[in-house]
Length: 398
Ligand code: SF4
Image 1: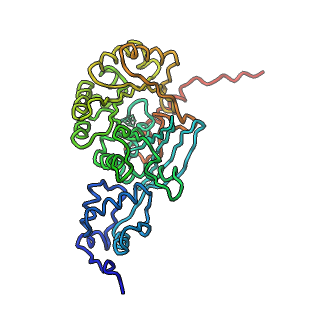
Image 2: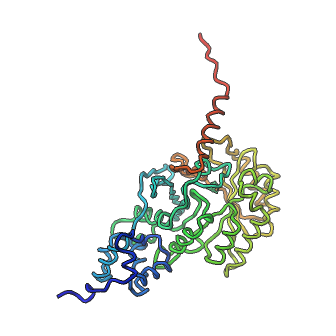
Image 3: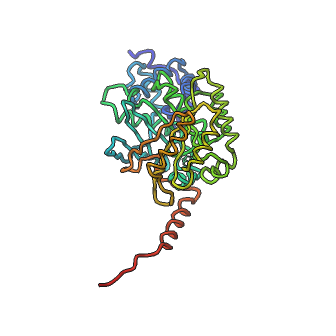
């Protein structure tokens, strides 16, 4: 005799999900969307918690292994849904412990995800877009052009894949990564809904349960996105500043022409004001480029600019890559800049270059982007023209 659950009726919603319609990928559904999905297939909303735990805490993608669900529900899920992560193409490990994964997403392009172990923390730097449309002048991703936004499944999929890779079979994957920073490829706040769903999954107790202080959304200054984030969620916020004046920032971060410094800093302050915890601060990212933005005067201007914003400052010595002529400042230059900020009372860290030997350092992520903008082609032509114009060594015969 069959179990009554085996006879569970197929709901109208299930019929919509079934048949010729592509299965719903549960990996990228936010907790709220997962509840709606459960209701849509005729199940109680609390099933969402069970599904979230199986997928994000245990790393299970096969419904038949979800043993606290009835057989009928498992079979129904197999008909209408899937748990589909992007695919790891390659994995590189640096001598300093940093690891980089090249991850292929739908359409064939590849993004990069970097894990940085440090003092017991395991920080994962993830991508939010395939390439980036913003073209900051010091950033390798920007030079790759832009293809598309990542789906929520492709964003959280990076956390899921790396967590699984770091966890022994049969163990919970939820504690494998302690911190997540959205500082990989792309501008997160230009892919708002998918980033938000992913952030909610990272912070949700039925999923990874990472503290909001340890999930950081980094923006180059998308003002409406900062305001929307303050209305919808409360992860940590980092601002890629890189210059203390509009004139210089317009060159380094072209988005500044649309959202100038005054507007961006006001949005950061509104973000802090919206948080119940008044001790939280904005992280300011400042890439130091030799002879461009690293003088004592720049440091003094930065100290003055940020004087009213609760923040801590992270200095990132520029990591060179082909296609641009910028250089890393000397250690003396970095220290001089840092001292000015320290004396002005800021908490300042200098990011140690990590993963340099595997091109995983900050600003070096490039992936493989099917560029819709043809920007990468233009930059390669420029670099080739530059190198052709350089004086060639004279061949002296003995
Ligand atoms: S720094 Fe960030 S926003 Fe700017 S081009 Fe690179 S990925 Fe895009």
